[in-house]
Length: 65
Image (cartoon, rainbow, N blue to C red; front, side, top):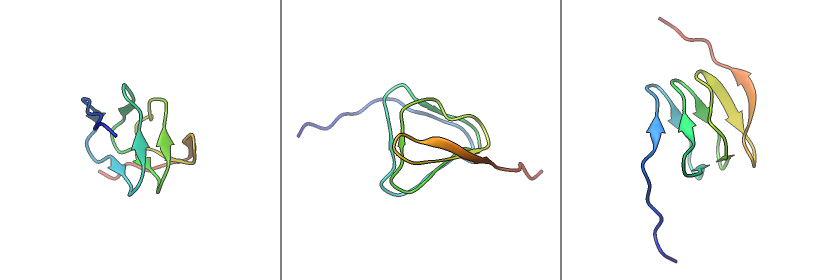
């Protein structure tokens, strides 16, 4: 299989867990979390926690200053 490479926009403090996938063109907002083995097919809002296939928002994170 050929390697598919593309630019990604990942905000500061964002976390993409193991085996998770981010589709081309999807932006990962600041502080967003994409859970284990989840697939992001749409932009992830800042400070949200996402899980599933396709990933859906399951909760909000609290930004600590």
